[in-house]
Length: 226
Image (cartoon, rainbow, N blue to C red; front, side, top):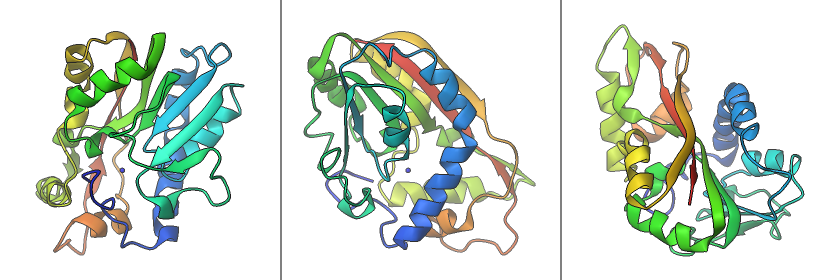
């Protein structure tokens, strides 16, 4: 889940903590991923690129569903899967988008400063009629909490201080449209009200209350054709 010229926000957190956060998040979104994968030509493509691949959870799952050559890239080498340097690369995917038939991302756009400019570069690196599938992106503008304590505002402010773009998730359709893509499918899901991961909040938010309210997060997904 940071400007790409700096180390990703939260890397001061223990690696194991980040992996635990990502694993829980990944497990919770399994039904959404299955729905998205059912709409992708995973058996027909030859190459697949994932910018901001992180710990490789999505990449490893997709490789079990396709024979396409997969490459994942993340600016933070410390979080990449160990011993997988042939598939998971350390690098800046915003500056250096690779050629592929299919782009996939998960919680990546909040780290892109100029999404339209980047997506125009991506279009040039997608094969003819290539696809971009966003598996999940937080819409931080619509955090719900019960009871309403104002913690959502604190979270957004903290994320912005850490150079995370909190409004990008709510504007994905606009970004892709302005970059010349055509939308093929998409939608939103709302997580159930539950206690958020305190370790994640502590990475970005100061003066957390002892009693954290139940919170719900809006998650946006979509598939666009170049």
